[in-house]
Length: 322
Ligand code: DP6
Image (spheres, protein in one colour):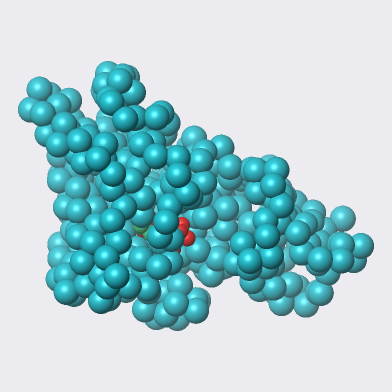
């Protein structure tokens, strides 16, 4: 039977992927660095069969429309080419967290899909190749393949653009508290953000800052230096949103609660609670702190007006077969 199930984590980018050099194969302008999230997972089963007449994609027990299935079907086509078969497939995916709200559900989904699909077909594939395959579905998905903390090397073409692990999950007792301040499906996909990023006058300036930021994040990871990591990821996240807000057309991802929490973090830090934010393409925040302070910081976040819920994550493993 050509069937397999894989599980893959979402990841939070400390250095972001924003803007595409080649949108057909999701090549980024810059390297990015992330941490896998052990509690934000997608489990995906892929089955290819001659008895299936049409590709069907189910996410969280709902069948996706033909239009919403396009990216998945494109990925299935890539898999079919690898094994030279033309069987249709059924894809069944379950997320452990809200989809489309600024937690990269497509990262975990496309990483799980790439691994389950390759395994179902029995294709022998190296981890770097699997990361490239996941990238074709969604850029950030390539970082959900290797374990722990990873760096996506931007590369020059399809085969050279993939993520590699920098450190295993147990390297540093970090916590990412995902703070949900909106459950709404976001109005602007990351794809539209990537597409308009270059129209911002600040786009080029960010690229100039990145070599310094990347080496600061690497130094912070190596030395387990939270203030250095925190200051760098906040600078980077603000830059992404400045670019989004100054793109044509402008994109505003934050809501009022996002802003209030950003302001509050500064006060908490001056009272000794070391917590820093980063934000992807949505209003929800990722609060980075050390595990020894996570309980008290989580309690404050849960009690914060406008917060719907929080999800505590530790560094996680990459995609694996179950
Ligand atoms: C802001 O194109 O990978 O999260 O397919 O919507 O998950 P989705 O996004 P993708 O872009 C991710 C953009 C980002 C930053 C990042 O994760 O690096």
